[in-house]
Image 1 (cartoon, rainbow, N blue to C red):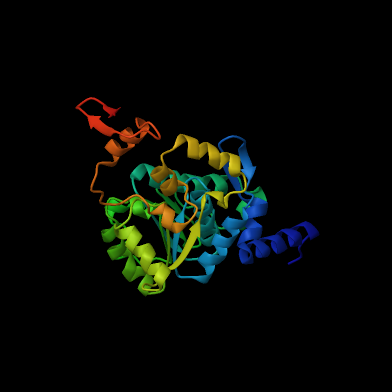
Image 2: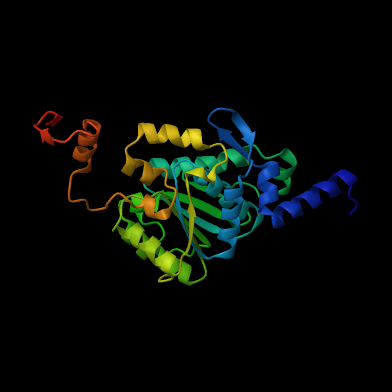
Length: 295
């Protein structure tokens, strides 16, 4: 069978995308940017580092700052696995059904905007469901809330646990997915911190000390190049110190500064901090309606 030069170039491009995930994402994967609309995915150096880490480690645990593009990255990564590799069973676990739908929606968005020749060359979509995406190469992506316990009894090639520290059942989720990884599957765990002393914190400490199977990876607030010192200074001025450290940490230690089982009501402490006069000695007095500083 004779091929035209154009067809040969497309086939060579297809094979290059199969072998090189970063090349595919940077040349063909589109994302919905909140300010600029549909744009080509421009991987940041930290995101490229994460891709390498996921490929090198079967058990990967990421502690990260908020809003640095990790759900966008994992949505693209799971598509590349399913589209270019046959018989991939990928399961996403999220905090709620809404978050599960939103994560898979990012994957479907990039699929929708692939060039026509790649859609014709690649496997065909078999279903249109808000929480599932399947192809005729045998690959399937299922995105569900962790409370539905979708991983138990499954044989999965990859399980993505999104915002693990915020799941309503983090221990149960781990109990259901650990046997899957033991038979050859991979696990990508992602989360911002949600206090210390809880399951995710213990998982992170174990990974950091080599006490469990996870390879740890930390990405601070500066992991995205569009955040500089002025951006961080604005956060310092608008957020409480513990809140800033947890959501936009500089180090893993900062991320877990908020106690998972606090002795004091953190909402009350936050209100007290807002009403304290710096440098003046006194005490905080609270009634049922408000808090005030008294000398």
